[in-house]
Image (tube, rainbow, N blue to C red; front, side, top):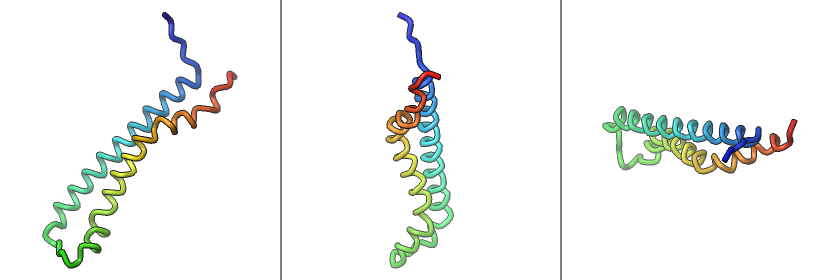
Length: 90
């Protein structure tokens, strides 16, 4: 059985792979930044100022990680949507 992929199929596969790679990169970057921030500032932690500590130290790395998780789950619908213009044969 010969499987022939159209231009839309190829585009969708490439977009899906790219989105998943970007999501993985965002998650790894977020985790590493979070670890580095915690190691650098753990001695400054004061429970009375948890909000300030959270916003200045933990928010950006957690935001990167959550953006990676969101992109991971939205990779398939995004790739299908973005590959739709290639459905017409040119």
